[in-house]
Length: 485
Image (tube, rainbow, N blue to C red):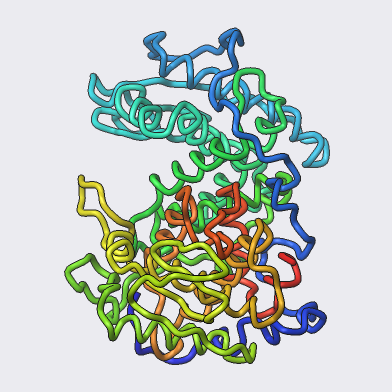
């Protein structure tokens, strides 16, 4: 996250006037795909109760009987077959209902292979060393690597990560079978196809969450969090342009598309087109301002006083039209008479002061080196501070500072601040990878980005990301206090 750029149109007024909620219901141009202004229930995920039960295979469900070429009959192939059977059943139901009586034809070929073994010729490609899963429209085939990819996903995120990847690949088959009804042809940019496929996967997982799947179950709390963590894992690397052939999207964009599908029906996914991508997609290339400070390109030191001053300046600028008195920010922890102490940043309403735990802040803000454990990055750390600043704005406007609705509102306001840094507000500028850092931090169990003044976190990671995204895209319309009131 670097600074010194021209002022963006979004930085003029994040909230319009947060103190008067009635004024925040005015009209604005809504980016395609952003959430509605209906007040969400903080105890639900897109209308479903937040659950914490088991996610994975349903106990006692018989294995599906699908013909698979080159399989070995092992655990990974059984998992893949059951996943594809359920996904195809879902689409067989949805095609006639959603697309004017269209009939879903099952994929013609299902092929398993071991990337570490003898290669198989598929889609004009030899699978030797190909750690992947893919759909090939040339012969209507879905193929997967049972040797490395599926076991790695299963070991890292659980069996539903495997289901996620295969549901995504089936999303490509859906595109091919729908053709013009999904707005897809040979000239369609890759990113549109990938966003649609992530969205179609979200459609399927809503069906699973509603307990309609024969072979799988998923909780809407920890279960969906792991799905979003899977999308984070398989994101494009920071600095990859969405215009590049083969681009799949950064974590923020991939999670957004999945959530659109989970919250809405397949018709919503088919509407993702080039116009929406140009308005909504956040995946950008690095530019000359994105220097490498020794922490990886686009990251700056969070314990540098000048960088903290730039953060404070950007926050003051983002919220200046609210009329709220800016809180003081100090670099040492402090006791508070009317709120719990939280880390790495804490807000005290009685003194209108933000206190920092620099050790914990640095731990979050220092990216992990490749192959090692560690923190996330500068934006994750700065967003923690921004969330406490957002509490000060809410206090000045008379909003409650505790409870799950406060956590949602805080995430939304933090996203609104982030929106002002897209092109820089004269102090900080959003860098490629920063929004992915936000997703990673929002999925953490103790993330302050979606927490109230006492550190109580919105129970659903899905809901946290959704609220942040609302603010990022639509913060200057006043959605944060209109929707999360």
